[in-house]
Each structure stands twice: as C-alpha cells, then as structure tokens.
Length: 382
Image (tube, rainbow, N blue to C red):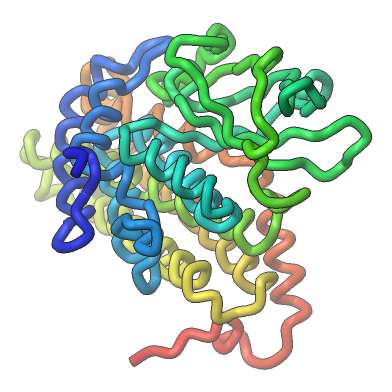
C-alpha cells in the first residue's frame, strides 16, 4: 500500500488534520508573500493520507465526507483552515473535485483519478473565467483541444489535476473535465497582489493547446451546476472559514493572557461576545453539512439553509475580527503580531461570491414555505 494512502480501517482523518494544522501554523508566516505557496503543507496532506481520504469507500478509500452528517470532514476542513487558510482553501478545492468525480465519473474515470489522488496529486476546481477568452472545447484529431483561460484559480502552477468547466462551440451548458497539468506550467500569478491569502498561488491558467481524449469529460452538460450539490457545497468553504475564525480568536485570547488583561471587564465582555460568534458559526457549519449529506430536505430548501449558513459564518467572522482588533488595538496591525496575518487572510477569504444573491435566494424559499418557521429545516432533536 502506498504510504500516502490511508488504510480503510482505523484511519483517523481528524488526528491527521490536527498534525497538518500544527505544522502549517508553524510555516504560515514564512509563506505569507506574493507568489507564496504551502508546498510543504501539501506534502504533509499527502504523507498523512488526507489527499486520498475523500476517495469513496466503494472505490477502496476511507470515504471522508460520507460519514453521517459529514462530521469528520467538517472537522478536518476546520482544522486545516485553523493552521492555514491558504492551505484550507486548496484542500477544500481538492475535496470538492474528488466529490464531483465520485458523483459524475464513470468507473474508468473514478479508478484513474482516485489512483492519482492516492499518488499525491493535488486536485482543484476552477470555474471562474473572463467574459471573453473563457475555456472552450474544440474537436481535434484524437479528441479535444482546449482554448482559453481560467482566472482566480487557487493553486495555479501547483495543482496537477484541474477540474474545470468549458463549452463546445455553440453550446450554452458547460461540461466538466479533468485536465492533467505539470507543476510550474501555464500559470500567471502576477495579478494576485491581494491583502490576504497571499500563499494560495491564485492566478490565471492558460489551457490553450492542451490535447485531451474524449473520456476527459466528466458527466453531462451542466452537471457542474446541478443542485443542491453546486450551492450546497458552500458549507465546505464555510468550515474552512470557521477554522480561520477560531485561529483569530485564539490569537486574540493569547494576547490578552500574555499581557495579563483578563481582569478588565470590557476585555472580558468582548471575549465573551467573540466566543458566542465562534460557537454560532460552528453550529451553522455542522447543520449545513448535515443538510447536504443527509439530503432529507428538498433541494431548494437545502440550498436555502446552506446560503444562510455561509452568511452566518461570514457575519461571525466579521464580528470576531472587529472585536479582536478593537481589543488588541494597534499592536494587532503590526507585522509579526500573531493577529496581523490571520486577520488579513480571514478578511480576504470571507469575500465569497454573490452574498446578496445567496441571502435573497434563501429568503424567497423561506417566504414561500408553509408551516411554522421552526419546522422549515426538518431537524429532529434527540
């Protein structure tokens, strides 16, 4: 068995994530620069079995994320995000890709691509593209020829298996395909001069001229946007964000303890409010994961709940940032202080697309639902 493949029995993904998080936390400061990338941390993900862990049990993996309520996956994503939000962003994309392959790939594709995950390949999901010059699929002599680019691609130049969407000429609905890439090729990171998440290697990837066989296409037209999988998957990045929120909280709490400011009632009040925000985010993430993996609710109701969850986590993150920065003061904005980089990374990663649409889409579903509000989400406590 490959050392990077977790055994099917007794593999503890959460403990592996704790080890990855501790190592990533120790390196994150050094990786915080333009064109940075957590290469050693990704190697740790492979070494400790986490790149292979999301491979389904039916395909010989441990099925991380298949457990009831995806409790373990939520904890793994949270812990990796705690150690490094840049690493958490990359790992969430890897998990997303493997879950899409599990859902839409045929037996041959699953066998080939899951073997790649076991061999330590980093997967990513890249969908964003410019209005002109997006990825297109043209017919070639031996299959497909790709033209165009993807933008805001995290891990550009380091992801070696990219799950992307592209369109055939005259086709509106995109297709999914998995493209093998070489490290250090085709990536342009020059535009990513961001406030935070500098170690995520986010940039533009030019696919022009790549030849692929027809069997690179995954699923059918517009499967990528099929609900509730598409919008419901937002719970995963919310779990990573939760880890970043906890890291900010702990840096803030550590600052107060080191300076002996725990007797100040105003500081204690702020810390208590922050603890409420952290726990609220944790509860939303856990229930959002359950709503998607258990699929008890109708698809539109699942999407509505996850949309609310991602916004609740965003609000919790912004609240903790404000409280921590007010509590620590100017020191928290100075380079070298534990709070400074953590705050920048979290503030940047909280900027997820279309928050207003997510909120109003959820509100439309809630407005049109009958019955009592307490019964909207179908939770049975006990």
